[in-house]
Image (tube, rainbow, N blue to C red; front, side, top):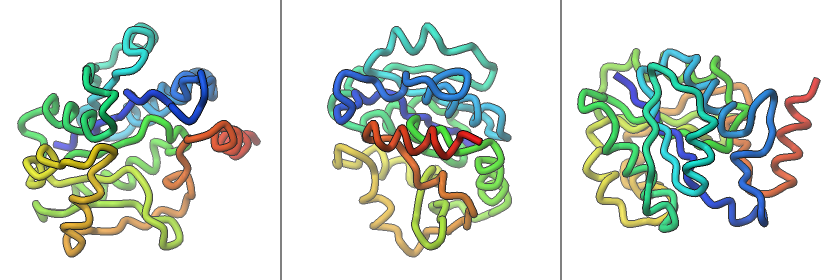
Amino acid sequence: MVSAILLGAGMSKRMGNLNKLLLPFEESSVLLNSLNQLLASTIDEVILVLGFDYKIIKEITPKHSKLIITNNEAYETGMTSSIKTGIRRANVSSSHYLICLGDMPLISTQIYNAMLESIKGNKSTDLIFRPEFKGIPGHPVCFSASYKEELLACQALNGCQSVIKNNESKQLTINIDDESVLMDIDTIEDFEAIVKKKSP
């Protein structure tokens, strides 16, 4: 069983007064488009971790049988707290945690499925899976559940790169011929580039 942890708790500090996750994208928003692409994949469950603007986002998020919404009350401390919140809410039988960023709406269902096929098709229980576009590592990153305690013990505030670095020999690269695995939103310029790429 693979549990996706979709991170949607951030404060978008580099976006001024805008919450980047609520910016309009396609027929919904940045976050909801990311969520919908993930829910349409072969993922077993999705833990949507909210924090900043929790009530607003929860109100506009449609219900789904695969979806669990949880609130990270410590969201101001950084991304790692949201990853830990998601892991704690994941099904106890999960074999993998797919850590997904809510500000990467260009990642399609097809890309998620390509990753999930590789993850579910590998019998090893101690791997870290990561997509790569033209030699550049991207997101989402998937940790085997054997890293659960190491992830929960991670002291870094803004992600679990230390866990990846400490286990470099256990990384398995999944080649993805689409730069969307590299394109997240930190600035208005990033958002405009993503909208432009999506436009026909």
